[in-house]
Length: 109
Length: 113
Image (tube, rainbow over all chains, first blue to last red; front, side, top):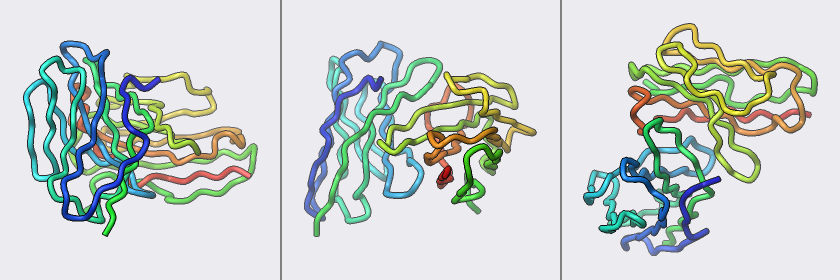
């Protein structure tokens, strides 16, 4: 069973920031939070990961709460190509990823 | 210069047949994976190999047999195909077994009739 909770679906206007929340209240101290996305009919794509500090890369920003029980993935300027299912996962030492159903993000023109 | 490639992309076959799916990565990664994504879109890990050694073997029927001839290749052979095997199968790789940053192939859509 997936260990994270995400909204089933979200909408975002093109050009606006998309903020995708995730609850991972059972996360252990040594587990990272990973975000992936899957565009329709493609393989999943790694986005970003973090342990406890906020992280930013060319694709997105990751904000992790101080208690590490939740996080938010931010796409600063969403485009139509960002329409996808976004998965939030926390992985332990063996790095085995347990996937949920994710959040289906629709970016609208 | 595809990073993780799979062949074939589509596979339609009849129940009882034996089929193979091939995967290759040119990233120089040590670890490779097979995942199954069912009709409900759940993605579940099946196997993982690290430097040709099996390190993850989930509860998968023994009709499924992975083979890793070298660390750049991980093939999946399926015997006696059943209707329930219909799914999309993804291959992935990561730098090593400690890295959860995985790179996925485009998937193989298997349809068993």
